[in-house]
Image (spheres, one colour):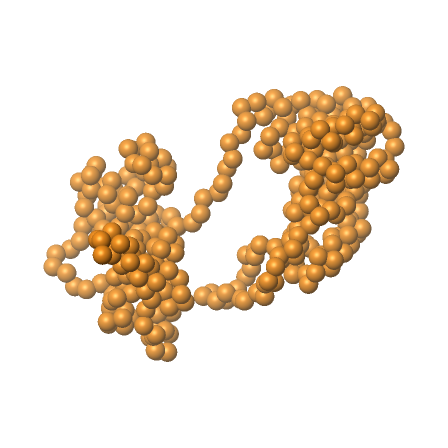
Length: 352
């Protein structure tokens, strides 16, 4: 057997390694340590608890910004010595501390991109910071010491907020939208339109729960969904909605037929550049409808469409609830819009 194959087998075996079954007393002590201890001891207790729950070493390492071998180390220490083995052992000499100067360097690093310092990485991890301090500052510290410093500096290991790049000419295009609205006659109906996907079982949202506990929520075997088309008259506050199987050009045309039947006079329709808005099939329909004119929003500008705020409120009030069927979910959506007054619609959309 080659060394590569053997090494792969070892890694696979390690990735599924979990702790021995803790006694009730040990489990209670681990939970106490996670709750009451500070710094690395609390992290080690959480590592053991997560492993007992079936999480892989890779998942635990990612959560706590540690290496896989570090996870295995504390699993093994618990297996041999129980909760007491998670505390630091006495060592000769004092470990080097991170002083205020080093803390300032850490904060400076976190405000910069690792690539600016020659790192082939997109984020600063505790091991990477420790390596930088050792190579650039001559400060030899363990990654756990860096984590303790980060907590003192009130940093936490959380997901960043995703930010899409903005088109270079977005402000110019937004100005064009505002000018187009200003130039529209008072007799013209101005509609913003959009679509959203509604699932029978939506993504789990944050809720208040007892510390250390997660409330179980029943989920369906299959998660069905539908597309809800909507439009808002920014002059009157009137809303128009209709549900379809998905976003598609032929369904867009059916929704336009609804808008055509429910409005009079000229209509300025403002929406995004989704393919089911700009397809040849939709363009052909609009050309035959002389009283409809469309204006496209800039790319990646959902905040420019007030209907997005209506969707957000709808999902908070209705779609965040667990409905037993798509029919029940659709009925809830209809009740929401039937009860929504025109004044409330404009206020929710930020136009009131």
